[in-house]
Every structure is written in structure tokens, then in C-alpha cells.
Image (cartoon, rainbow, N blue to C red; front, top):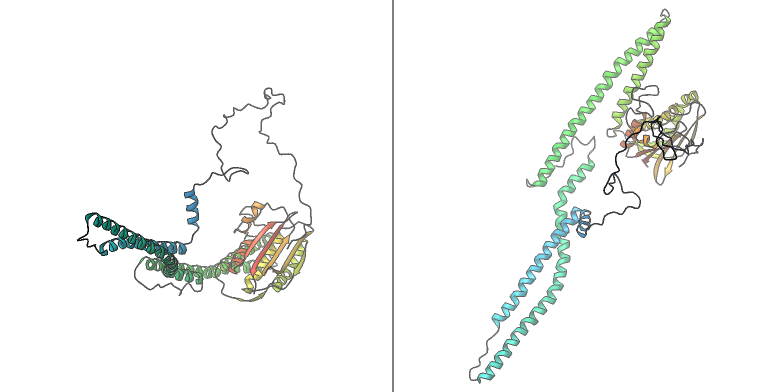
Length: 448
């Protein structure tokens, strides 16, 4: 979903800038000009070059040894298959050892059970020949029995290997079942279920039981921390808003006094602006804290209506700033907190109005469905935004080309609140510099 580029991009100088402190030597290779002092340069480095980052294009990476490649392959195998291979290999080696023992014992058993020859009355030469033939038959019987045993045992061993792999997988699954229970519980946990959801693993006091109990204790500490945070936000909301409201009331009464001098009214208007800024800052901080918690309200929301309401609400401000707003709103439904989502879109539009061109500015707002995901996109003209500065704009109290104490355009919480709201709804937000200046912010949420 692209936006029109509008103004052409800024031109880039074709010649590199030269530092005023750089040395300039004559073209004829003579001595340097006396206007510039000569600095002794250190000798060039010796030995092979050392790269400080990724290898340059065309660099040959060192060849890894077979042992290193095998270690890399093993490192990519999951724990379930590692246990399966281990158990299967143990069963298989036990079968091989048993086959070897039987192979030896077959020859010993046949040799012990082989009947002796009764050669009484035979001539010595014939008796010796018969004895030799009888021993040949003995060794032939042992060899034939071992060969038959080995042939059939190898087939049986192959079946035992397959059976050992299956049994090893089942044993590994059985051994990892408590860990699966921990994983399922951790995935179900949220800010609202943390108070009563625990693993509570049953079984002997082994290493897995100790791990589960430790995880449960950590959940208890997290629940206490979350409760403390909720109470702090609630108390701060009351304690900070009340004095500011009283100050605003007192200042408005003072400004409404017909006997007040012009100097007093000017001071009152200045204090009223400072008070209003502090109110906006506190509202933003409280909204940011609320957005970073688990959603307590989940309703069907039509983002087309939310975007339309945000644009209409900020239309007078856009007209005052000389910004032309163009909308392209299509149906896009999701499930979430309507108040937070409306604040999210309003912050994007308000940020696009603030950081726009001083005159003849443009602003585009779009909603719709793209590849099964809900998309809200806000783009604006404005000053050039370096790509390396885009990521930091979503941090609290960060503004482009402004320090933390600059308050002419707000407290620097708008995009931070947008990111917190989007993350609480299971989505993501990205921003890219717009060609010709300005920013393009895209919010993606799960569809209804």
C-alpha cells in the first residue's frame, strides 16, 4: 500500500565534503605548504588484516572441520529427538551386545553338547581319520549355526532398532510432559490470570518438581509486582490530576477577573499553558501505563469508523495547520479495546499534523485488509527523516531533531503509546521514511 511521493527528494552532492583540517599536498609531490603544519603519520600496520565486522564481499570464510560440522548439526536437533536418539541408541547397543554374547555361547553350547566317538576296535590309522572328520563336522556345525543365527538375528536387530526408536520417542515424550505442562501454563498466563494460574506440578521431589515450584514462586512475585503497579497507576492518576485541576480552575477564575492587570493576565495565560501541558503529559503517561498491561476490554471494533472519528476530531487542527487530509477508508474489523484503538489512530494523525510542512502539507489515512491482516496506514509530508532515526521515534520522550526538554510539539509520548496499544492487541507497527520527506507508519492487527 504505497502513497504518492509528492515532492521530489533532496539532491545529494556529487563531490565529497573535505574537512577544513585535512592536509593538502601539492600535485607535483613537493613539500607541503607551510600554511599547514606537517603531521608525522604512524607506520602502516603489519601482518594479516583483521576484520572488525562481517567479512567483506568476496572474502573466503575458513573451512570448518567435520567435527565442527557435526557439532553444528547436533546443535540444531531438538531436545525431544536428542532423547529419542539417545534412548534408541541405548536399546540398539544392548541388542548388539546380547547378539554378540549369544553368538559366542552358541559355539560353546554346540561344542559341549557334541557327542564323542566310540572308536574302540578300529585300527589306529582309521580311528585317527574318523576323529579328524568328526572334529571337522563339529566346527562345520558351529559355523553353520552361527551363520544362521547371525543372518536371522540381524533382521531381528533391525526390527528392534525401529522398535527402540519408537519406544525412545514415547519415553522422551513421557519425560518432557511436565515441561510441556509448564509451557502451556506460561502461554495462558496474562495480567488477569496471573493471580490464580499456577503449574502446581504433582509428583516426586525431583529436578522437574523443583523447577515447577521455582516457576510458581516467580509467578507469585510477578503477581505482587503487577498489583503494585496497578495500585500505583490508580493512585498516581488521582493524586496528579487533582492538583492540576485545581490550578487550572484558579487560573481561569483569575483570568476572568475584570480588575486583573494585563501583566497578571499574561502571567496567568502562560501558567495555564504550562498546566495544560502537564495535564497532557500525565494523561499520556497514564495511558502508556494502561496500554502496556493486559487488555481488560475486548469488543468487536470497526477500524474504518475509528479512523473516521479520529480524522473528524482532528480536522480543525489540520485546517489550522494548513494540512490537507486525504482518506481512503475500507471496512476492517478487529477485536480489542475501542478507546485504546481510537487513541492509537488519533495519535498517528496528530503526530502527522504536528510534524508536517509549515504550509501546503499533505496527510493520508488508509484502512483495509491486506493478505488477511488488518492494516491502518498514516503518511505525511514533512522534513526528511533519516532511516537510522526511525526506530528511536517509538521510544518515550524521543522526538526527531529535538532534545528531551523541548516541549513545543508535545511530550514525545504519541508514538510510544501507539506501539504499546498495538502490542497489547497482538499486532505490530512499523515506520519508514517517505520519499520526499515525512513518514509512513503502518499498523497491522489481527482481523476479527
